[in-house]
Length: 153
Image 1: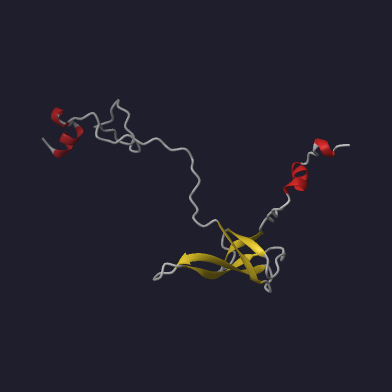
Image 2: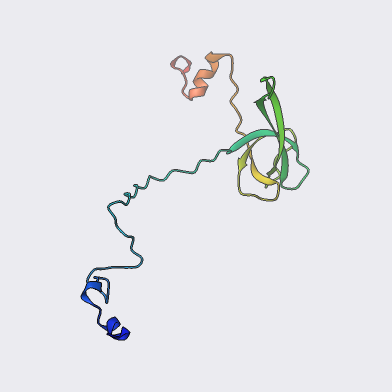
């Protein structure tokens, strides 16, 4: 039997369902299924990415550049040898689009896209804290916005 004849008429022992097309649907892009294959895990619900450094708070030390302020952030860290907490200071460049901050202002630094080589923070004003008053009698009605019955005329 010649080589061309054997290719045209394959012997029955060499025939498989994949030769010359078959009724089984086989796609080269389909994934093989096996009893040993691990089941695909269920997708978890969407969780936001973990961002380690979101906000820093510091004091403006230089505001001479246009749309840029230098902010000094002070943090407490343990001393490597003595384990006492010491103040560590670091200066960051922050974006101030409206030039609204002056030297001495307390600002909050918010992480954002890199604006320049050294600026990756946006300066945001810190909301003012309400001062605690010592006298609780006179401030309680004003705090709730409801006058007391004894004060109504």
